[in-house]
Image (cartoon, one colour):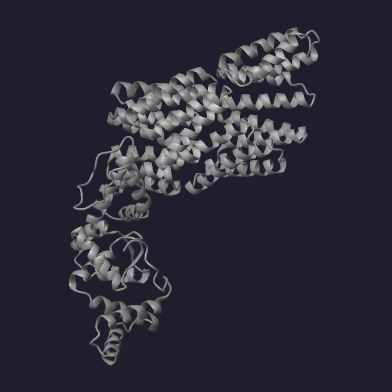
Length: 633
C-alpha cells in the first residue's frame, strides 16, 4: 500500500450492502463450500438472533458469521478494537491495545481489512463501520473485566506518553513524562513530526480524555490535558480546549491534586483570555495564583502573575506593569530565562501602549536575544512583531513590514496558527499605512479565515473591525459600516466591552466621513463611556481626540475635549495621545487667535513629543508649526 485505498461501496447507513459484502467475502474464502450449505448456515445464524428485526437480524448474522470465521487471535484483536473510544486507529495504538508487537499489529489489521471488517480511508489509518464497532464492543462484554481494563489502560498509556513526547517538541516548557514508554511508538524527532502527529491524533486524544472523565483514570485525563494544552492553544478549536481544561481542573480537585488543579485552572484561564473573556480569565488566574502560593510553587506563582498582567493590559497599564515586574523578579530569582524573556516582552507591550517606544525597543531586543539563545522560535517571532510595531508607529513602514513578514513566515514554519492570526492583522495595518489598501484588505480577510478556523471569536471580531477600517479608507463607507456593525454584534455576544468600544469608535469615524456629525458624536461619546467603564484610559484618550477632531470639523467647541484627552494622556503617560491632544488644541487656538502665539507654544510641545518618540506624525506637525511661525497658516 502506498496511498489511500478506494472507498468501499457502502456508507454508515448502508447496512444491507455491508451484510452482502461480508457474506460474499466469507464465501470467497471457502471455495469448497456449496451455496446450499452456506445458505443453511446463514439461516441458522439468523435464528440465533431471532429477537432482532429482519433487516438488523440479517446484518448481525453476517457479522456473526464473519467473526466466527476468524482465527482466535484475530477474534481477540477485533474485540479489542471495540474498546477504542476514538474515530480511528493506527498500528502503534493497535499494538498497545492488543499487547502485540508492531509488525504483528500491521499484519493483523491488513487481514481484517481484507476480510472487510475494517476500513482504511488513509494509509495506516483504520476505522470500523458504526455497526461493526457496536458489534465489536458488544463482544467485549464477554471478556473478563480485568482484561478489558488492562487493554484500555495500555491504550491510554500509549496515547498519553506519545502526546507528551509530541508536546516536548511543541512546548518551550515541556513537562516530564507521567507514564512509561510503550513498546512501540512513532519517532517524533522534529517539531514538524510532532505537529503532524498531534493534528492526526487529536480527535483520538480528545475521545480518550472524554472516556477517562467518566471512568477511573484521572491521571491519564490530567496528563492528556497538559500534553495537549499548547497544541490546542495554537491550533484550536478553543471550545474543546475549554471543556478539556475545565474537566481536568474539576478532576484534579476531586482527587486532591492541588498542583495539577492550579495548572489546569491556569490553562483554562489562558484559553478564556484568548476568547476575550477577561473577567473569567482574571478570576482563574487569581485562583491559580493562590494555589501556587499555598503550595510554595514559585515558578507557578510567576506564571500566574504573568497571566494576570496580560489580563490587566485591557486598560490598567500601571497594574499590568507591576504584575509583570513581580513576575520578572521571580523568574530571575529562579534562573528561568524563558520566563524572563516572556516578562520582558510583556513589559515592552505596556510601554508601547503608553507610547514610550524607545523603551519598547530596548525590552523587545532583550527578549529577542533571550528567545534566540534558548532556541524559542515562537518567542522570537513575537519579539520581531514587537520591534516591527515600534517601526510602524515611528513611520518606518518598510522596516515594519519586513519584520512582520519575518514573524509571519516563522509562525507558518512552526505551524502556529494562533501566531499567524495575530501577525496577519499587524501586517495588514502596515500595508494600510503604506497606502496599499487592497493588500491590507487581503491580509485582514486571511486573518478572518484563520480566526474562524481556530474558533477564535474575539480574533474574528478584531479582523472584521480591521477590515472595516480598510474599507473606510478605500471610501467604501457602506461596506465599512457593515463590517464594524458585525464586529460590534460579535463583541456584544462575547461580552467584550472593550471591543465594543473600539467598534463604536470605528462606526463614529465612518459617520464622520459621510458628514453625519450628530450620529458620529453620539457613537464617539458611547465609545468614550465604554472605554472609561472598562478602565481603558488609552482608549478614552483616542475617543476624546477623535471627538475633538469631529467638533473641529463641524465647527464645534473642540478645545475642551482635547484638554480632557490631554489630562488623561498625561495621567497614564500615553505620550502619543498627549501629542495628538496638544496638536488638536493648537489647531483650535490657531483658528481663534490671529497672533497664533498660543497655538505656536502648544504646537511646539506637541512636536517635541512627536520627535522624542520618533512618531510618524512628526514631519506634518513640524511643517504646520513652521507655517504658523512664518505667519502663513
